Image (cartoon, rainbow, N blue to C red; front, side, top):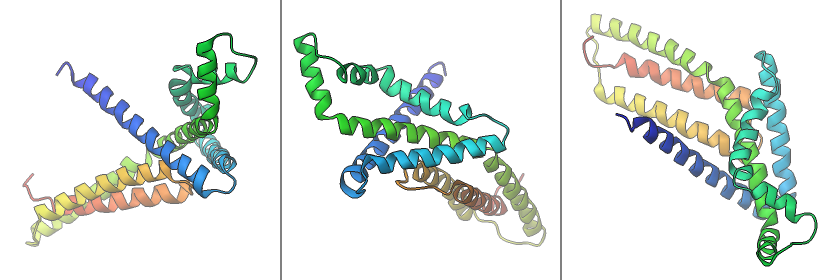
Length: 222
């Protein structure tokens, strides 16, 4: 029990690292192999999502910091805390003062474009995560509506002698996890513009609909 919080923190950190690595790989592939504009296309995506996020935050009565702060925090953890940001700044000016600095500079400059892509991709991931958080209240609201409808349908079915199904209950429950999990990851990693006000409500409605199916066929007596 005492280690449970540490296990949770470790699992979240590991999941974030895996998500960040997937984002980098996807960004590298599209920047260097697919997009003619290269990294400029990635910067355009960042600017577009940042604009949408700031507008959404303003509609909810929050400032731009609600979107920029998570992105800056993630960038700070990955690049500033590790010294990569300062290293790039240092190597962009003046000559190296030692042989180790010269070796590091050559290594950094040979991978400079890839590192810049990772930096922009990290900020993009942070902005998109912040936007998802702004939509978070919509999910429990629609889930509650779906669950209430499901319980009502279950009561009607039990009164009328309708069947219940543990199989349908579990399938609907797992599909909710798949829709929310895969849908959220897909939105975070999608290498193109995201219509947030369309995609997230659709996902929330699907989750609410499956919640209704789940509780309609809940088999145990209450």
